[in-house]
Length: 341
Image (cartoon, rainbow, N blue to C red; front, side):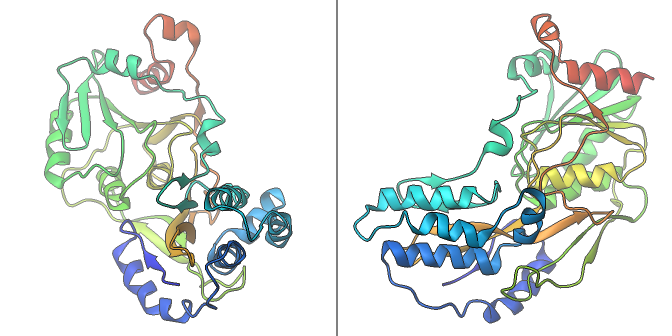
């Protein structure tokens, strides 16, 4: 079975793990049967998934018990559709949005990290605040609100952004007394985009978190914690107060961005708890060719705490029905009030 690193991994981690991968790909060859594919998937997770011990502690996950629970549902005469359904349900026991099973007919996923919670975001309200004359710099949309507060919207860190884009946007907003960065609904993407943006608000080299990598098949076999620092940008930087807006849809690289920003003294986070996703994903394949993605590299905040299940805001604020009827975004208005203080 072949394992490979996803494109969003940090470059130095990419090369480090390429050196380590040959030691962990010597897997037992299993037959392309329902039982063989089940055994292969369970074993991949058992040996390479990075949160088994953590999730056992958090909500009592027992991966051996999961094996026994789903093994009895595997039948040699079951169809591939039936097998896919069982395997997807087994993976859902991990409660991880980075865990997916991909086949030509479907994409197995766990989305309860956001689907079970209020959106706390409205496209119609966003249009009311942005209007039609807002600026666009690659993946960024931005404008100056009527109380001289800057507003910046970044919908996905999959959208590229250059240093020139950020220079132009921050220059345009430079006379604003504060800045709102709205990442609600941002499901992640390229971590380098998140770091590039965060570096514009960093004034000195700052410890923002830690990471580890698996060193063996055991659930607790990890390398020592490796510190991760955010370096100040050498381009235009923002020194005034900042409010980052979050909701449950903030995940993966956007969750990491929130973690970085919370370490900076002039930044407050407003909105809802983020969706989490603190494991960098790897992929592997089953005997039948289906691809499984799973969290393999855990990351932690500067206090060495896991952010897998999300990050608390500094201020919990939800959209209110009365504000919505009046065309007001409760979360944006709270951020404006905070910055105007």
